[in-house]
Image (tube, rainbow over all chains, first blue to last red; front, side):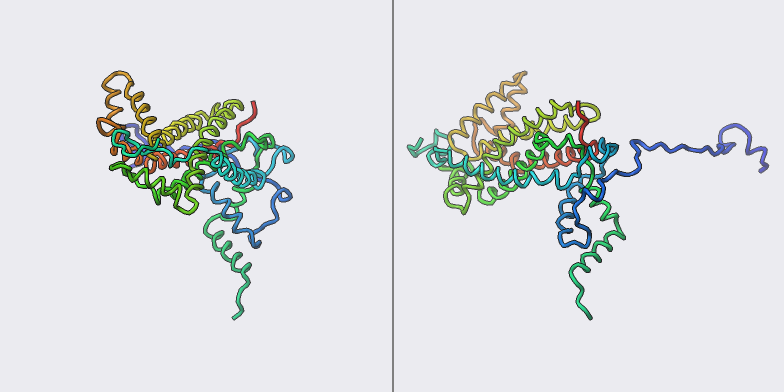
Length: 128
Length: 231
C-alpha cells in the first residue's frame, strides 16, 4: 500500500495525526505543606514511642489522602500541627464523660427493678 | 551472634515498611499536617466528642449484647429479666448500662451542638454541602437508634412509649402507607415479641452498620476538604 492511499480522507483510511494531550490535574498541588521540624515532637522512627505515634496516625491514614487545605498556603505562625494540639483534649473529654455518666447514674432515684415487665395485659405481679 | 537492640529491630521494621510503602511520610503527613490556628477553639471539639460518644455506644452495646436476651415471650419476659440481670448481678453491668444510657442522651445533645457549630461557622457551604447531608443522615440514624433502643428493656415505660410512637408513625398519610409502616414496625396486630425482635435487629445490626459506614464517609470528606475558612 502506498503512502498516498494512507493519507486519503475517509473511514479507516487515515491514521489521526498524533496530538499532544495536555494533562490537567484536578485540585492538583505539589504535595502537602507540613509543619516545620521545630513544631513537631522529637519522636523519630528510632524512638521507643514511635509505635504509639504510628497507632495514632493509622486513623487519618485510613481516612484517605488529604486534599489541598486552607492551611497549606498559610504562614507558619498562623498554623499549628494536628498532633498533639488536636488530639490531647479527647482522652480528657472521654474520662470526664465517664465520670459524668457515673455521677448521673447515681442521681437516678428510680431503679429499673421498680418497674414491671412490658405487656401489662399479661402481667401477674403488682409492682408498678 | 549478638542480640539486636529493640531499637535496631524497630528501625529495621520501619525501613522494611518504607521500602514497600511511603510509611514514615504517611505518618508525618497524618500527624503533622497543618491546622489553622483559628481552629484551635473549643467548639471545634464537638464533632470529636460525638465520635467518642459513638465509640462508647458501640463498645458498651457489644458488652450489653453479651447478656441481653431479645425475647419478649412469657411473663416476665427474658428481655426484661436479662436487663435486670445486667443491672443487678453482672459485674459492673450497672456501669456499662449507665454509660450506654447516658451516652445516648449526651449523643443527641452533642450532635445538635455540633450541627449548630457547623451552621454558625458556615462550614456547610460549598464544597462541603455533601458532608452536611451525610451529617443530617447520621442524625436521623442516631434518632432511629434511640427509638429502637428505647423498647429493648421491655418494661412498661418502654412498651407504652413504643406503642405511642408506632401509632404516630401509623398516622402517616395516605392511610395505606401509614398502615404499612405500622405493620412493618410492629410485626403483628399489637406491640409484642415480633416488635422487639425487629427493633433489636435494627438497633444492633442494621443501624450501627449504617452509622459506621456514614462516619467513614464523613471523615473522608473532612480529610479531603480540610477545615473550612472562617466567615
